[in-house]
Image (cartoon, rainbow, N blue to C red; front, top):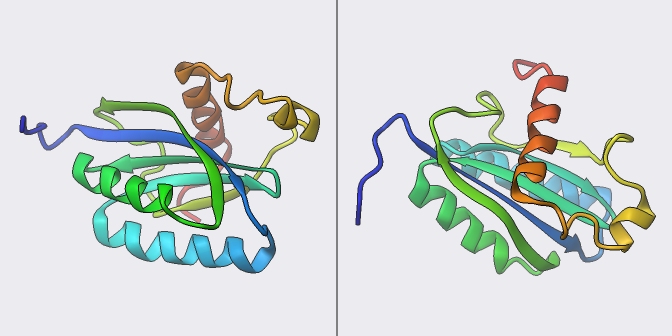
Length: 141
């Protein structure tokens, strides 16, 4: 297996459909993600609403792959679809073990999601969503 230089990180974006979505379940997802990701050097963001999860993970390649494999088998969602994965040299969410954000008004309507807009995103468009989100937030609060 080829080793990546230390300054290179993997980022991965996926979407899925929540099952039995409520405030309690999203709180549990965020708490466990923050705990596990901090330990593994993973940062990122989870965009959510009762009809969509869209998550960005970034960190060491083996840790991101392991986290995604765990996520993919989680029974709190279905229809997991990887939208983008790449090796890069910069993080978007340097201070967030896992940032949770509801779907923003500039993203998609319920009708858009129902019609499959997220599953049709090009990899660069999915990345752009998180780039825009990372510029919107103060990552140190």
